[in-house]
Image 1 (tube, rainbow, N blue to C red):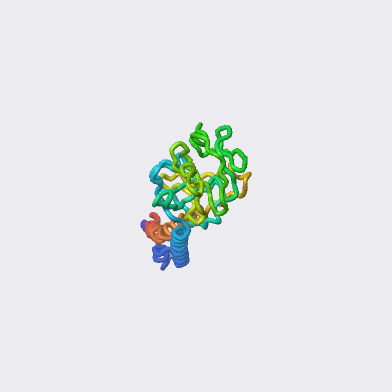
Image 2 (cartoon, rainbow, N blue to C red; image 1 turned 90 degrees about the vertical axis):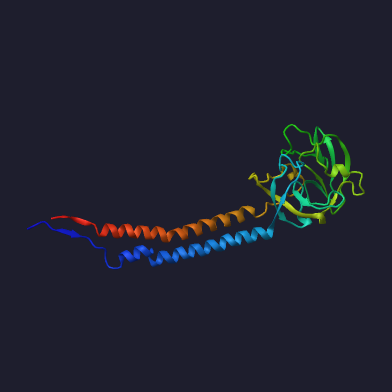
Length: 257
């Protein structure tokens, strides 16, 4: 018998199913995109409600926060402020714009400096690893201050040049600020991307520290949303390409008899 060639033909509808990616695949990809949008938009909405961005104009919080750095600060009530927190507040006796400083003492505390180069709160020497390496807690000693209830005592991490509570000791409030003046608590430096602030563990012996805000969860939701959106959107083109390849293989000559 003379040679003859045979051609494999894809089953009816197979090419069309491959090109479309399959009904189940289309449904799943649509669900992925929809869920991704919910997570992405929900994460952004949550972040916008909970956080406020600030630009720090001075180096008074260096090296924790540099001049010009952008930070995200969680909106908090003054009652939620704890020792060691880096807060944003506004007090017209200090400045006409928001100020960023670290809370080192709260109502009822006594604070003084320096003992062995360290700050003391309620007579306890405070370890402050966030200070510039080799730098003492203050450039010069200051007398003991008893913080009134409902107020806080604040210092910059760059103690040599920070205009903080020590610059207002002669004021009627002895350099303290009302809790009601606090607008937010800094969670992270986002530009440059230095990340979450380190925990102020030196204050743990004096009481409970603040819990970190939900920033990590917010970021995780946004990232998960992006992954689902891109994955779901990519499914159709990828499935179509795979179906086209399968169709081409199905119509290729099988050989000569």
